[in-house]
Image: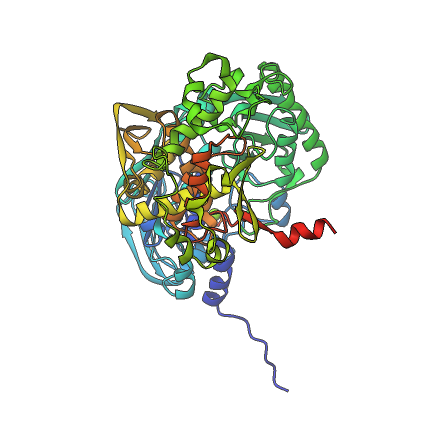
Length: 624
Ligand code: ADP
Ligand code: MG
């Protein structure tokens, strides 16, 4: 049989390699920024357009390349950074594989401008899909400009696979953050579609964190410093009270390289044990310096994972150092699970001071108390805890049922027609004449469930999930038909966010307006709120917006990416009546009616069941 194995031509091999190195525009950004850093640049400019799909440019003032090097740099395995295998274990540069430029040039249109200090003139090189199109002598300042256009132009499947420009931009911003944080001694500029997103002059690490995450970041930071023979740790952790429900500001840099390490992450979380609530994560910005000979960076295509020789020691050191730092900055005594009722408030509510009486639950409170009496007891000093519990439901909750709550005959607005039109509810309520029932057709169980009777038995409704469903559909409708009612604020509220947060707010401004928010972006970090949706209390605005931004960021990799959906979900989650809230008869009834008037009454927006039915039959069986 004839020989069948052939060596792949270089451009094919490069395309295959590109599959590993270049997943999306952000990967190109990372490689180009790292090359600029390796070239010793002190100022780096990043320019992107259309989420990097059509243009990514990195301009540096580094050492530049000679004519020959410029040409060679696009060859596969062409690198100036290592020469022999042993060098792999003594790396002081970001790059070493000599693969990035060859890979990028295989799948995009690349234009290089470069000049070294000593050369009189520079080199211009154009490459499209690994083919050199033009090479010229040119006038250009010292340093390198690498322009990458039309990414994946020759691999349509990959190009189609890319997410929206906004999502790709966010990935790019993430990479930018990582590189810029690791190198505070380099100035960075970042432009998107012609406007400046970041302008970061040379500073120290702490200030770089603040440059990126906004002024608020500064007060959260607790310094961490430790030096041992095997390891130097420096950087910051966020104070425990700023721990978030979602992963976000967590950065490990090993020898100035951003890495992901679930193992070391665990060490940090372990140091916070007892200081943060379960399922919340501390923020951290930690720089580890180790002997390059004790780590292997060559274990992952994008070099974001590192193998340490002695992980266990690192773990222990990291954990104890952080514990010590938290203790030293007297963070620990301020937080005491046994004593401090503030801890019953989620950390995201940190700015809203929890009042102690709010947490001392009035166990003797009668959930069947008549709704009408509530406002009275709210103003009654004796019923403090009661008042506090009913307050939230008065705010967002009863507004919802405007017109309903004030009527004596509160079931009237929700006609049985809507019940019958629903497949699920039809079978439950069809023969039940809700209007004829007295107020006591519903009752609240353990401040968590609403129980109501139906012909075949009873329905137990999870009040929080049910309200989420109701709000979710309401917000979806508002956004779609743009009919939200906004309450104008007498005094506009100025809120501070990080630059990235403000970018996100800008992205979703349209939707926010359609649900009733009115705001203007004053500068890169300040937003002035002039109106809020009817359901949102003034004191909740910041928390609601922060949650929105957070959820929006989290969705970055989610498949069902839809701004509207995220907004509606977040708002429903944030504003829904919670477990533990006492609901009066009118509110209970309204919730039941509203739930079954929903398109999908059976599920919360997060796909959890909202109610269960217990039939007479089920009950009968218990008595056998
Ligand atoms: P690696 O970074 O792994 O060496 P690359 O493909 O990223 O591989 O780059 C190939 C070579 O091109 C580098 O080793 C370096 O010598 C040169 N090079 C790339 N970018 C720059 C730059 N911005 N300034 C100077 N030299 C560069
Ligand atoms: Mg490189």
